[in-house]
Length: 315
View 1 (cartoon, rainbow, N blue to C red):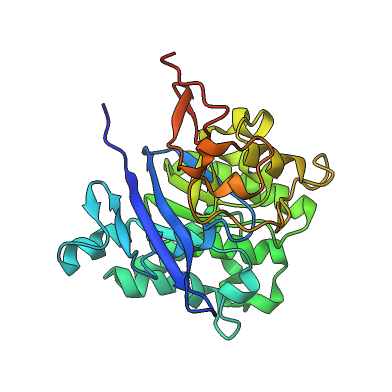
View 2: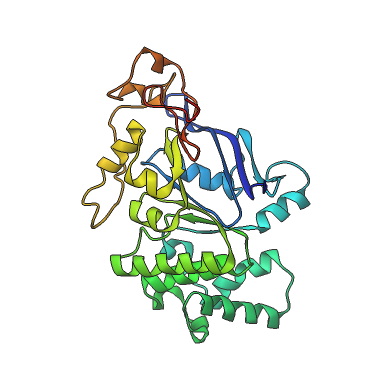
């Protein structure tokens, strides 16, 4: 059996709250991702998506747990091992207006990862910049322009080119189309699907846009209060969810034929602090929900964490 390219193991991360307590952002999150696979991470605001992105990119260190790339821990071992792992990872963020330096030319923006990560000659860097711009559908002749001279879609193409310039193996997409209008959104989704296939990229897609996730992801994890409550094939979960929270998530999407955007808040009640986090609002909760459920198989590829609706495949 092929080893996973990316493994997240029992990640726990909390932040202080104003009352002196701790807010749980991730609560033992675990998943594996095979080479060339795309995993969608969905959930409402506060589910833990942004924290996961920061931990994957090494912007913060988890309080517990590990992130492994090809078996090497991003947070353990020597600096050389950590650097090699992070070299394989790049990201595309939500809003290109804020992620692209407005004072730099497109050439300088796309070139920056090369300068910080690889030792290449000026000629080699120039050739890579041109190839990256062409790969995302941009004419290299615009390399002297600055971001304000481009449309929103063109700016996001530049952001994608910058992410691809170091030839990463894993791409983190953090809400990559949410700041774009409908037609441009579809074009960028098609571009992302194309570069993923052409480069055999492993992708983590963090999104509150169900349509985008459906279009790109092979598998989906539904996050609530920092925990995975349901995981499995994207089409299956986003069409016919089983977990009460996954159902609430999909039912809350307004006008799915048009927008498919998950609202920031799905339930008004705070997650339960003990046992199943959903028990404070779940319509089918019982006394057993005072204990935390584990992910169980519904089918070999589909898992949910719920005492009341879990039917393990072995039964």
